[in-house]
Length: 250
Ligand code: BV8
Image 1 (cartoon, rainbow, N blue to C red):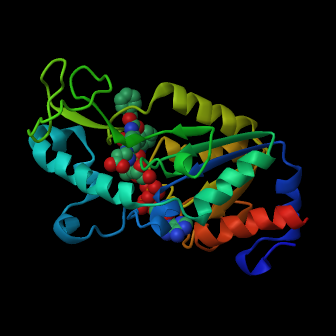
Image 2 (cartoon, rainbow, N blue to C red):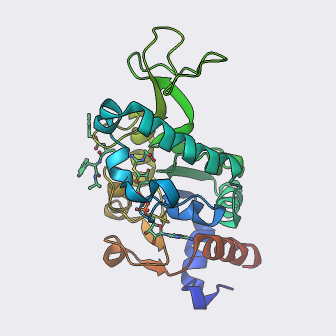
Image 3 (spheres, rainbow, N blue to C red):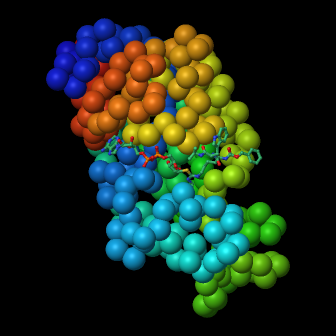
């Protein structure tokens, strides 16, 4: 049965095994074991002197488009080299055994889809995609375009990463679907997020208010911890596989 050293009790295993609908919110903590730095970890090397929250804004792009573009190019290289880890893979396995499963992620690294998850809502966009900073359409640089940032092939404005910056609205359809899943699920897992960034951070409480069993998977406490039914203290790459394994043997 459950691995009680990680807080996985028989009660939690049985609730999850019987659930017909499960919703999950992930944050950058689930990608930490894939080598993608979490959003609030001290940045390494050249980027150590910048605060991510300062760079991930329209104002920073307005002020210094080349700097912001280079920061994303650095992160894109990390993401390209990264592989899904056992935490991502466990969520893909869980999706296959739950009748209704929704995975809302704050991450922009695309690792959930690469792990085989299908119903993924990218609340904050995807770092691999670019879009025109004026027209807003998805666009890629023309071959041979050496400018930094590259220019929109359609209108010549700067391209920007297709992610949601601080102060920007989340993609409406993704967030509406994530809210609906939070309101209707029986079990809500909050994994690898500091629960500080809104409106995504409101989803777990919305689930709890609608009667869901609320589970947090994180090595540390967060502002959500006092409100959860189960706080599983550990790394996503360790806890999630143990949780899914417990379902298989139960
Ligand atoms: C908006 C994309 C309005 C870019 C990101 C109240 C309501 C609404 C908005 C606000 C509000 N209060 C404040 C706001 C404004 C702001 C906000 O929330 N600010 C915070 C800082 C207070 N919100 C916004 O601006 C949002 N927009 O509301 O617009 C609007 C509405 C209509 C019209 C116009 C405007 C937009 C927010 C999205 C910003 N973009 N990312 C990019 O990536 O470059 S957010 C960024 O933070 C990442 O997406 C990241 O995922 C996210 C959250 O961080 P975490 O994922 O939690 O990562 P973090 O490093 O913080 O924590 C990692 C956790 O993992 C830790 O707990 C750690 O313990 C744990 N961990 C570590 N290792 C592991 C682990 N866990 C498991 N396993 C491990 N191995």
